[in-house]
View (cartoon, rainbow, N blue to C red):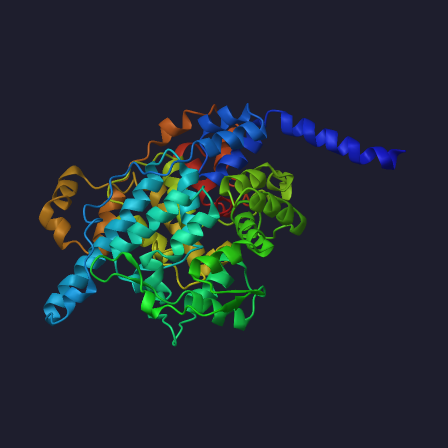
Length: 482
């Protein structure tokens, strides 16, 4: 009798948990995973909600637009053809200008991450940036990289199928994966291979002949060199019959993408990646299949998949708390946001992120940043701690007013090298530890819960107060986890 009743009792208990308010710990975990950092006010508000109410509210906050003004050059595409016949000095000047725009582009996105009212949106744009990988280093056009990010942003919590079709024709992707050189009689297989291995099916779900046939379907996909817009060159397209994953026909590229979307492996591959981003390093196969089925049945609606992940028991399981390593951007943006640092120039934080292994708009290769434990090694862990130490000692290091005024002059700014700019930016940082700590009463256990995802690894000094206490917490190894 007990064996027959146990599943029913467990189901009833699970339903009761799902209908009860989340409480402080679950709310903190949810917000910490879906934003760059959780603050006390939001945690307290979400603690009163059920899991479903909280997740629905988070998904309802997402936005497809940004508040940070875009760089002024985003609508001015400069064709590489302009360099034909240019002198060496003109080429160097063009390259310097493009490099400057690249820095400005990165600064624009980092500023949006720091100030956005929808951090989940930025987390998802970053996720897709590391899924549909392309790099400024090869594309060499900040304008095209900006346009690609708008495609990712528009679809970040929309429909994966729509995004796949748009990204496949995105000019930055066309350049990055050599689609422009893919023509009838001389197919280039780069995009066909990566769209299967990295964007949809994953390794082992297709054969070499599928790649060759799919490459024929994508022939003729190119860009218009003067405008940087997508261009289909019909004379370069192979209009013969192709066979891809067992289906035959006079397929073009869009047909092949639809064939890939029809495969159950595609939904499972995407859900597995979302699982590793939000839940734990090791996806649970049964749960992945369940959520993937919902994903496919709802036309690859990303919000449906994400909602199911964030409502799963696995997401809240104790063994999955503090189980993910913060990326460099998680660490930097999360710290600046959580402790309400006031900052000036953001470029030095881009340098810091690059030194820690995450150069915005420039993943290391077509597979993107590997993430997880790969973020941490002896060098990056030391650099992470040095950055945190410097942030929480910024007030002690501030220059006297005359020196700071001199450093702010246009001539000084122009002449300053990267290190000098970094030092000056650190001097511009302001953190009011007393004001931030005023949220907590003396001995308030919520302080530790807000800052750390689990109990500290090092005992620390329980008698320490103010910024010294905070410094102890952020330098604890557990602060590197989420």
